[in-house]
Amino acid sequence: MGMFDLLRGRKAETTARPRNSRPPPASTQFEASQLSPGSANSVRKDLLKVALRDMLMRNGIPQAWVSADMLRTSSPRREPGLHVRFLVRRWEPRLMLHGPALEREFTHRLMMLDPQAADWLMGFSWQFALEDASACPSLPHPGSWTAPQAAPQQAASQAPATKPGDIIEGPVTIPRSPDSVRAELEQMLSVRDEDHKRHTKGGDHFAPTRPATL
Image (cartoon, rainbow, N blue to C red; front, side):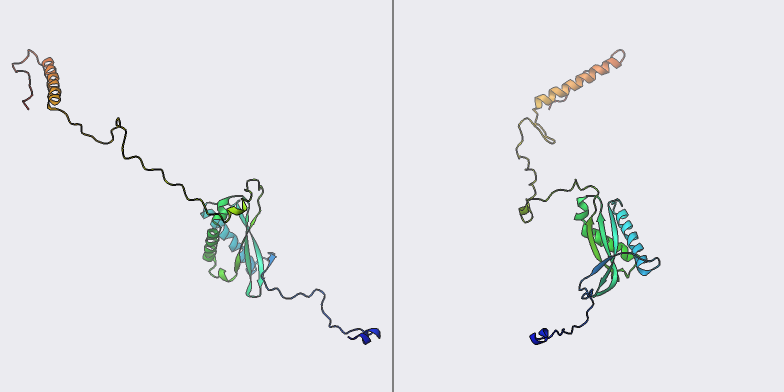
């Protein structure tokens, strides 16, 4: 519309356009799951609950620690399906440490229940829904994220090769002189003779036992 038309009071013709019209979404949209009983998504929601229960029970995780929300999803690239949002209700660092493994275990349990679950399971997300967040640690120093990790402590140093002189380890044979061996043998034979005399009535005519000459 030119300036002359504006002065004459003419209005430009505009194309009617809805006030609330929006371009089609280009990303996945999430909606609260309000499913009618008996529908396909209602059955899938029950399968997701069973898979979550089996995953927690078989891995020894208390069921009160983790729950899940089932969200209906719509995407221009896929058919509508369900998105699983895990809710962490108890602070346990190992849950996040093993988060990818828990997702794989959950998917494995779900595929055992429905082999076609890969067609309608849209993905996972995690949300903290802690009743008490006082046990959660605060953020570390900014430089700690990219700082090289400290090397593990070295094993204890090896024991010294030499030992104190007054400590003997293991079976050790100490050389002995012939005189000490003979004296010990004579003492043993003397004790034997005395014991024999005490148990023999009237004595005997045998000479005391003597060790042979070495």
